[in-house]
Length: 70
Image (cartoon, rainbow, N blue to C red):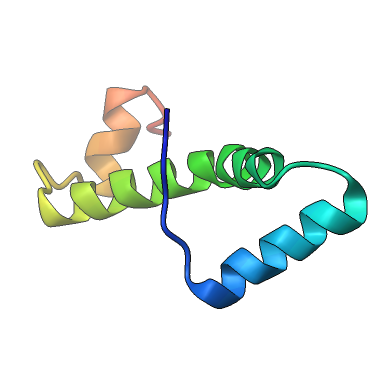
């Protein structure tokens, strides 16, 4: 179960869309979350890696590691 608070203008837009299409507000909220969850996960993972970087590899090290040298 998930309960969210939305700004009033977004709530109105969502309600109007639901009314015009015969779908529920929950349907559209679910679709929006599912469509954007991968992108949000990728963004936060990238930010976390930038903030907590480990070893920094040189191009030569990367090529040697996966045998791309030459």
